[in-house]
Image (cartoon, rainbow, N blue to C red; front, side, top):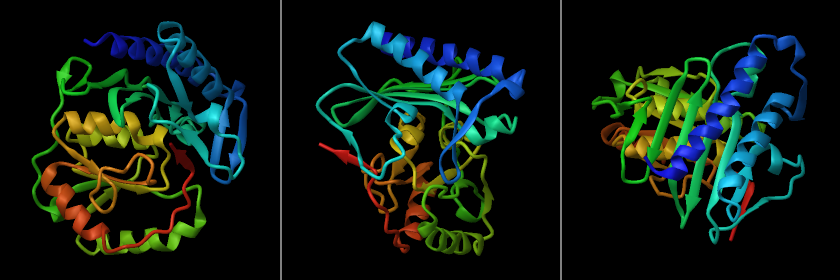
Length: 277
């Protein structure tokens, strides 16, 4: 196993232990609202701090793009540079689920370098499920190798999605996509954690996934895990620019092509939230 992946696993498990302790006494969790339908807890902040401390100790020259550290609440784009190895971190993906005691949340950590995700860890502490991937070395759930599903018919697929919580202007366009897809008698699920939904595509639990309005920390780790499990990931046009385009499709190769054919007919006007240089 790659040493950087080992370090990320250590950080994810540390955060997971903090989350599990807090889940035993949810009354002590302090909750605040960053923006409409976007919440943060003191547990998010504690987990993010622990993750960064562990990674920074091992790799002091690396940079960090972490949800709580970079979410200022302002409308200014967040700056991101391709020039440095950067850890992209979501301490709790699915915070709203966590707040309500719904066990669909996870820790997501990815290493981005040279315009690619090289290492990925998604840890579900409530189920003790550890999803990992290193570029070119496959994807795993605990010690089991992952493969995407073999489904070839969209009509028989189980597809995951998520509503665009941060931008109500996207609702009408998004619901038109849902209407188009639901007419094909496709089964659709929403569990409220993009990172977990991507990992469930990688493990064959879902045949595909799509969402708009995501940030890089929502999808970075999960996207590599899907790819290393034999799946495809792209934006709604099928291009590789999904990490900063705010829209993403992930699926096994056949379902990916069918989803792209459906989704590419819909237009979304998404204001960039990340300024890449």
